[in-house]
Length: 118
Image 1 (cartoon, rainbow, N blue to C red):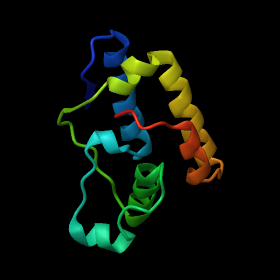
Image 2 (tube, one colour):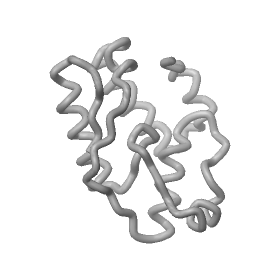
Image 3 (cartoon, rainbow, N blue to C red):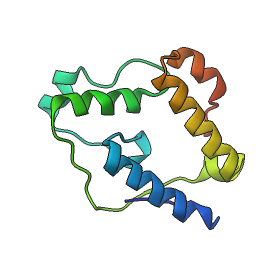
């Protein structure tokens, strides 16, 4: 279960929806504490060397390897991007970038639209 650490009331809803999406699709993002056995990590070739969507590519490769489990443990992650850029704007940006990636747009091109939030 993903929990975003901010104060905005929508962050609880977003965390719950991200968790449900991951359980349904078996695709996780880096802020969800992805972990895997070393032999599987090596068999997949580790994380791909791309500037964005490496977590999505990694999760898709994991799914191709076999059964993926989602634990019920809680993971708390930063809400900084959500609070800085705005909740609705961030939702739109994340869905747009993921959709474009899944449609075949290069992660190198997409990175131009995703500033480092640190």
